[in-house]
Image (tube, rainbow, N blue to C red):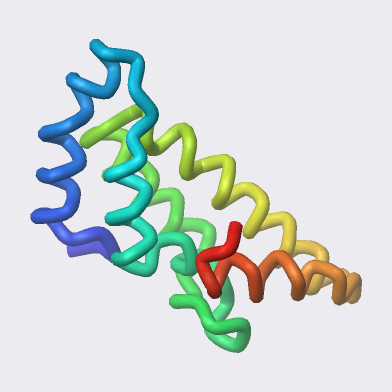
Length: 108
């Protein structure tokens, strides 16, 4: 079992074909991912996130991609920015805190 529960992944998967076929943005997927705390999953705990490691978020992204490739691609851009914030802070550039706190608050 991962961060994303199977029920959520099944709901996302059930909409994926329609979003692709009708060329629609998966707003509902992103809202459910936000409600599940996925926007903050890769954010370190000290910044209000779940603190998943790079390996853990990669595993969750793979699970999401199997359910809905387009949704996974879009949220991956968010996870990359969160990773950038983590890297900045780890190198002493505290401007990265703004990224991490924003992601934890669901603002990114």
